[in-house]
Image (cartoon, rainbow, N blue to C red):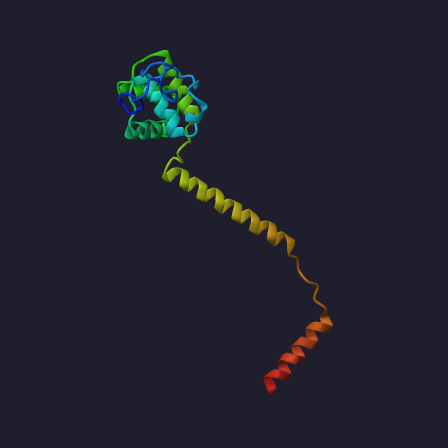
Length: 156
């Protein structure tokens, strides 16, 4: 059973092989679709398959590791460093997990790049808006009338 505790019933169709209390030996995603609802559940199921146990902190760690690594090979190397066995099932898990994991933003450099892109877009928008404006024709009569009105207002 996922928690490691023995079952009170002979069959757990969610995480164990039919008729057994052993974890399912499938890593290819063939575990029941109802367990594949979230990334955390999927990772937990895969760890149960690979290691024979799965804990919340381990599931979170592996998920975060996959999000921060640059490639499936780098993720696989980190998993091996954490004593996950080097098997074809582990390689497939690393590839699948890397493909499913959301990528992290990259920190301050990525934020600075995003700000620079936003500033550039704002400048382009202002340039487009400025291009829509034009100069007004100035009538000589109007200018003279305005000047006269200003002079009269100053005398008052």
